[in-house]
Length: 371
Image (cartoon, rainbow, N blue to C red; front, side):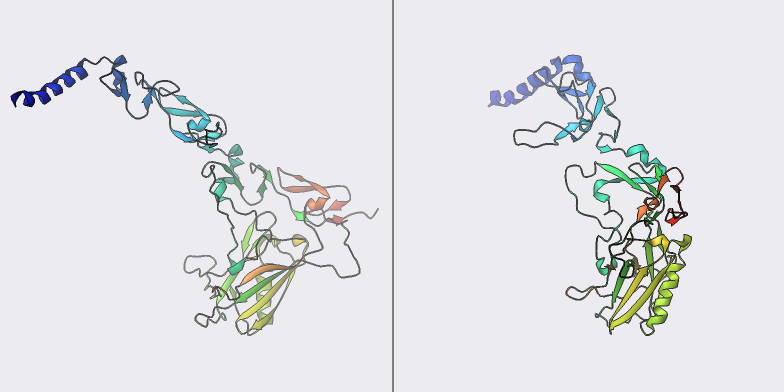
């Protein structure tokens, strides 16, 4: 019994002596534990060489991220984890990645944006990009089509980025000023036997039937986005379907009084479709709004104290199976919409059109000669 009781202490003592006498290279550089086979067991993020073998634990290991480009494994899987994401060189002394041009982050895991968007835009991840400028891409059901996005869950989520330019700026790095757009004055319509058609946008208001909401006397606003991606929101408009003429006049004046004469001419008509619904037609007839325009957005939410513009909001229909409020293009314009009316060149440093000989105007859509 005594001999058996002595085995465990003796074994522990021998293990202790072996550990004390272990002779690892450079004593693992103070960054690991020397094992009985005289091989270092390195602490996290320490090793040696490109293969990150233990060695003497003298090198730092840099952060890993999904590789931008790599060779597939036996299962055909790409984009495995790689040091510095395969887009930088690891500094073994500091454990920091030195990223190649165009990449940044502690593991070079994301792209930079061209020229940092030239100070005229924001650098956004690909999954946060919205659908262009809503060029009639939606019927804008429930008036909620302001910034349409799509699910994006591929390998470069939170990695690939691009510029989203500020209003009046464009190009891949937001370095160019955008010029006015307008109709090509020499463009010929398909048929001249009928009157020229202008773009018409239809706003359908459908009151909610949950609480028998009455839209009358409640306020809302309209937001217009120009071809230069400028956004302008009207003053509060009082909803009044008891006097459609007065109601459409209020909408007309609110849009016409937007800054910078962004809408220089339009007509507004309307009709009460039923007890709970009203249709409004907005026709763009001005030189500043020729051709296809972005769909107007209805600000129908409540915007109280401290909010601009201050509006009550509208109690609109949102029930599944019921007719929702929506915006749509009900008539396509004959006119087109080109940069500088296709009769001039844009000076991207100033955002001004340099019209060709014989043309003038902000968007070069006025003839000066009839040769």
